[in-house]
Image (cartoon, rainbow, N blue to C red; front, side, top):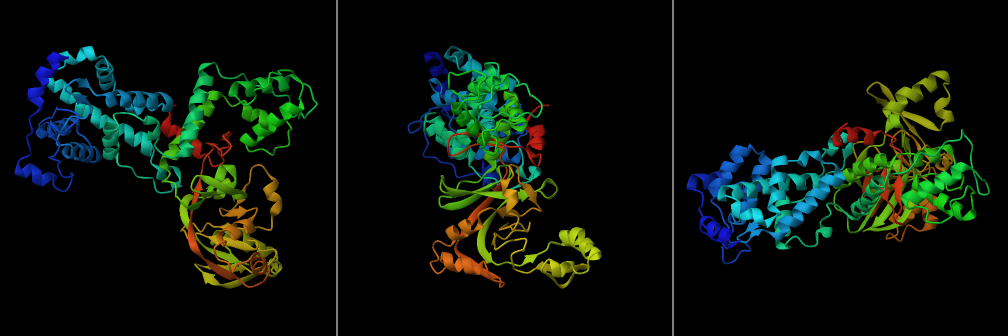
Length: 536
């Protein structure tokens, strides 16, 4: 290593600034050079000529984003090496490369497979190769590794897909890749467990991803034999019960030593938990639908987890105060304060033909005893045909016509017991005309899968949500709210503290109890994203 120190030090401790023309070109695209970084004040004594970076950029034909990141990073470091010191490869370089390789292995991201760079870095992990490396070779590897870091961080932290192409209209969270690399160097590659790209939900799901890879490497699980449409309950005895016990033992959900064919009361507890994992009613009855979920292969579950981790890279930072998350495939609304879930409410979401849009808004208004302003599509496709069949239809449905628009009658339903919006609605203004509301059709909340609406979101317990939202407006007592929901006059209330709302789509996640949940891909968003993420 001493030979390398002597040969590299004189060459790289040379600081050459751009000429005035070059400096003027870069004025608006780079951060100010930090000239306080010198060999005496830096972690590495290796520096390089700034013009070498421009040659590299030209040879690589880098895109605008990559050019800006490379220039900003090295200009802010006074063109000090980031990955090497005069003693060889830096410790944080090894840490990053291990992190990078694990990312590729776990997330199957073949876009980052640069064979030449991988071969070079893998060789450099052996210090004995360093003395044989030319100065130009080291600089080329330095710059390639930095460019590769920015490509890696873009995929690992922001995601590989454009959310807008997959019906996801929540602004993608932003991160500073240059600052991220600076922090890696400053921390010397330590505490990488704190580097997870998104939030606690991402970390929980990644832990399960590793667990499922372990199951896959051990051979996965066998298919459970379906027995027609027969159902099984506590006290029954059958081979399929033994098979389910084995399946749950492999996934880690059943830890009892009993492997018999008997459906015991102890196994019933485990089965009810399993039903909750897949979103079924927890009645302890083994059904064909449950067995089909258990028969999904571990490889397919791994892909489902990967798809949802990709989406978790898209979400913005968690608000520190209160916010609402609606997860469409789960058919649930969750009220959060920070990372703490306060309560949940069952919902009805849009059917496939009228899929609920994935977006974010700010809940600002509560409307008690609301009118239902019938959307033009429903007027055209449902109301007008009904009027033609029965000219008293509007009166029977407590509706009225208030005018015309674009050749269609403008129709609204008056407040009342039969109103399609029920007793209250919650407005977070948006261009999709989607909101939360009550419903007179309470029986739909008894279904496991609840995609029945025209796009808006129906709440099983709207009064619960209203009471929470108005908790800091003391004039709105429970009695006053009940009265406002029982009259024929529409009443608007402005919230003192608007609340962020996120309408999301996750078919795999870890809940507050640490259970890995799976749901059906009701809108086939997973199917479309899989074609982008995986080589078919």
